Image 1: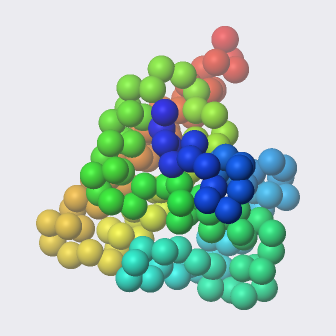
Image 2 (image 1 turned 90 degrees about the vertical axis):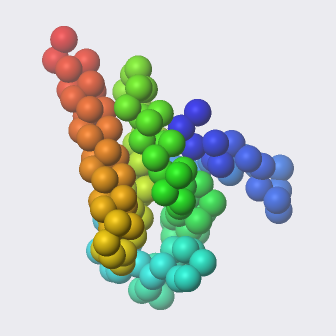
Length: 146
C-alpha cells in the first residue's frame, strides 16, 4: 500500500479517508487552480489554499484532507514512498498518482525553504518522486501502445 493513511477511518464518521480529487477534466483544472493560487504551509506543516474563494469550495475540503491527512510529510516517509514506487510493478491507480504529485509539490516547497544538506535531501527526494512518476507514465504509455 503506497498511502496507508488513506485507509484509516475518519474520526467523525464511519467512512474511509480515501478522497480522490480528479474525477473529471473540470476537477483537474480546479486542482491546477488550487496549486496556482498559492498554498500556505504553516509551521506545523498544514497545507491550506490562500485564496479564500477557492478554499471555500467543496473540492477544497477534499484537497485539504489529502494534503493534511494522507500524503507523507517527513523525509523518512517520503523516502519510504519513493522506495515503494521504484519497485511498484504496475501502473499507479489515479488516486496514487494524484497523491504522489501532491507529495512532489510538498517536497519541492520544502526543498525551496531549506538550506545546505537539508535542501539537498529534499531535492533528492523530489527527483526520486519525479523518476517514479515518469516511470509510471512510461508504463502507462507502453501498455497503451502494445
